[in-house]
Length: 178
Image (cartoon, rainbow, N blue to C red; front, side, top):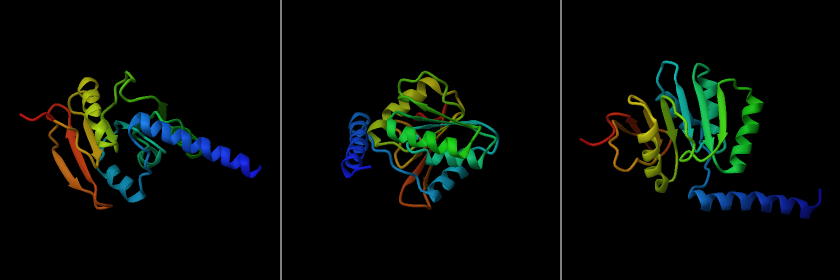
């Protein structure tokens, strides 16, 4: 492969990331091992359905599916490059309990399950709240890394041991003040 071909491929990759970063108002950020393990520790002990809004490169959903084969895990990602990478990684890992969907979490009409995890830009968190108010059943749990959902009351705000972020924990039905 010539140097020009490599540069063209890199240019296309960078352009895709930039276009979707502007369109979605977020840049896909990898999730480190310690942070993944910490988030996994807050999942319910019983079998459940977990959805990651903005699953990016697949780090968290693959780790959850690997650590908890009793859990059905769905990753929703709109940006094509991180989605493609996560699909490849999921196929390599052969995880029967992991499903990946290329879609905008705001537009996909589906039950998000028992637990929603997210690590999204703060400008998108109001959209997360709107979607979950409409689609998530009472008793469902939301775990948001780093950013609170505007207007929601967390039952836990926990400093992450793996870094300077906070985990915001919500329960649908008791998440609104008052």
